[in-house]
Length: 281
Image (cartoon, rainbow, N blue to C red; front, side, top):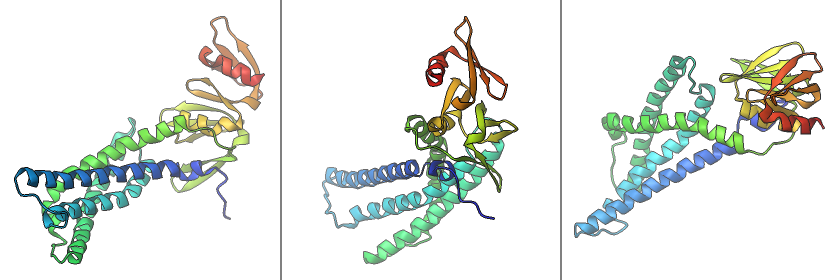
């Protein structure tokens, strides 16, 4: 029995537009490095009293080297982003994801070095010169240091990028169900069944009338995804479906309690009281 994904594109496939923008910015950075390298060569030769023309090897060799390196890194980046989404850095259980990314970083560097050597060899043939395609392997320790920095920067920066995108993205259309993954198993939780959502470290707890389901996501991301479905924040760690609110009881301190149609009572912070009362009205 097959299931079409009942969720919005952002839930099942991630923020594809954001990923494409992240990769595009990375490609622009690589292009900037290539341009700086070429102009540095031209400047150094001119300062030494031996200016070179654009077609001379002193110019095109560094362009070929840097371009081949940048192209391979950009080509490998989607695979790195995919792995970061599945093994994100977190404070709890760090040894697992660190081991995964350490092995992946070594593989990333090895593929990078071999592939750029092949690209350089092909480019040299077109330019009427010769380049050993396995030559960069002799400099792997040098390349590895740079590759580890690029990989580590991606592992650290990509989750921040996704969180910033989630905070500033406008609410989308309504969400039919939330896809919850547990290894190879997938479960679809209808949004109509959700009563409230609570933060739990790097996860959120999805509360329905009869179950509590753990889902890997931030509360901020869930707030954005569920805003169009009538969910409102009542506490820094809690969202509630407006349709599930039966009563709001304000306390003298300004804090409040929300009684749900299920009979449960949840505490709310005065910081979010106005939003809850206006939505109830």
